[in-house]
Image 1 (spheres, one colour):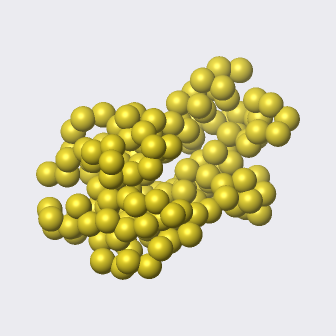
Image 2 (cartoon, rainbow, N blue to C red):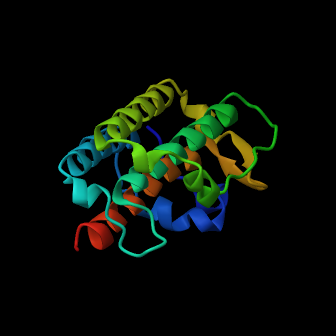
Length: 172
């Protein structure tokens, strides 16, 4: 079973994300997240989906696009680390990604289809990892990171943003 990473296995700025992941089987946690996230976003009205809690903030539905883009990037990083690729991986600017993303034009249904496809791909990758491979390390954004840390960051990042949606977007 995949064990929570040690704090020295990932950059300090990911500590809050990893800390949000509950104890348990990470694959099952990610599966439950998918169920919960799909249920949350599928119930949004058009007004709720397009809501911004402040002028320069993302729309609620854009948050789902961001979660998906980030998971796609992190899963790619995870694959590279798992395969022993030592090539340093570049960071990414989430602000630039969102500025250039078309998510504000997408329906919630299309965003959920995209999210589900990415999550299923992530789950398939995780299910095929041998126990000893979780400790492999790579370099992303000029920082060392382990494979298991990346997997936990994926779960924690989503949990972080879902909490923001519940607290700042849907508490309107």
